[in-house]
Length: 456
Picture 1 (cartoon, rainbow, N blue to C red):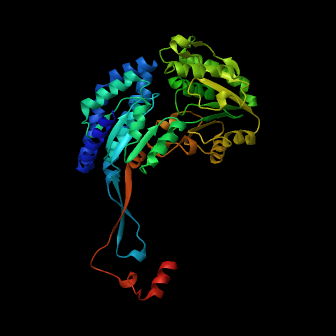
Picture 2 (cartoon, rainbow, N blue to C red):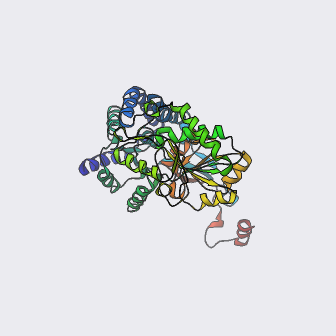
Picture 3 (spheres, rainbow, N blue to C red):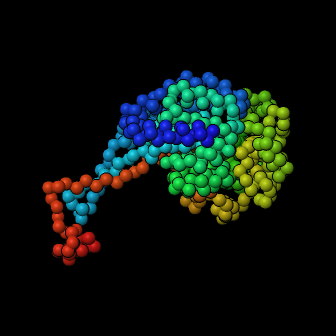
């Protein structure tokens, strides 16, 4: 495998050095190729997602394929303008020079994706790499082997390995890849693995984009529309069975809303998934036995007020709401990545803000309540992204950046941010030859005038 990776990288470096990937028409053609590939492989990818995760066709299209397709369309619409040289203001002291900003591709990219959204989180960054003019090595997750196999078939059929290659394997293969020299590493995964990626990248001073996770708070304040909040939180928490990096991780609820929310949450789950959720065609399973055991162990960390059923043979965990959860319990120490929602009561704004800000910066922040107050709360906190009176939806809009901050990651992508993530912004100064002012040259004649011009 090490020799294979080395061969691929050598071929990609040579291809990038040829300059072919920099051409606008080449980039556009490759984006359209990926568009065609996604259309052809729609059914195989949906079937694979069902096989590995019990993800319905509807959810696969909504949360995976449509997002990548939308990203491709956005790049096709704006690529020419993103690539254009952009004029920048030039101060008088530089007269008669002109200043510009130009972008150039970083080069050879490594994109490592997780298992929870294995299509979207591998191919969406690839759109940015293609758009920016890079080559790419793709590494899907081994925890979804059927999906990874279909993705490999797609890439091998539509792209030359010297341009885009896909490498299969476990964490040992990840280590082999991280030991290579890339021009950018784009990694989506846990904070702990993100630290290892950053450490490996530091050996070659390789820039990294880290899309991580964390414990994203969901606040239901005293003036929230409880029925609406319960429905949107239930949807965001049970989407992909909670195996979403921006899923609501814990609920901070005003004491006056607690009982109404419990009733509304139970009702919302029934509306979404039916009376017997285990039989629902739209409820995803835990990815493997280890994940099932870890998440189901959290059921003892509080009092079950909604849900609580499990089926180990099916890796099924019923959407569950927990009350009386200790802040020292295991469920409050690590990202849940499952359909269990711990509920913490607060009485004052100060108590709620203190609870959030004393913890690591999350990838997402959700607030249900008055919009004016929500904006004030958001201004006093920090997170990768946020929603007011909603969950998850900030990831859907390709016109706004998606990414973490602090413990939840670094760097953004989606839309132009994806193009920028795989590009270097280069300053360009153009100075004509028809005039050559003497002020900058030794022995600095008329320095008093120059000083006054520069410092006034």
